[in-house]
Length: 128
Image (cartoon, rainbow, N blue to C red):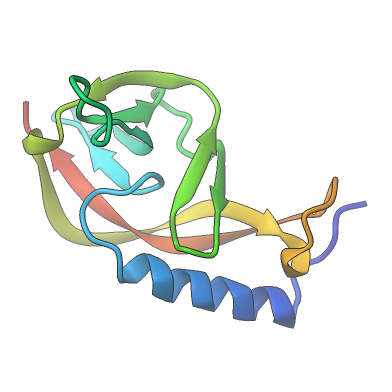
């Protein structure tokens, strides 16, 4: 049986939201709207890898896959990936959308202790 999200988890959630809001630029977990109107989320940031650049996205329709939210406000992703898109073709829309993610209940990393919630994430437009 999965643990229930409780008051301690809400405190952890709020601290992680504050940490995330202090970060700049497109982040794993943020949304991207494509020219056809479809909405995806960033899954991997290649900007620190020489010769790669850009950000990968979720496959179409998979915006609620597994996004882990750590203490720093960064997210990591587990699931299928689409090809990367160039980060210089992204524009911050100023829109914020709640996004599903998880972390370990009360910060104890043991099996079957995930608690799920939503956090505000930025929305970018992709302009190829």
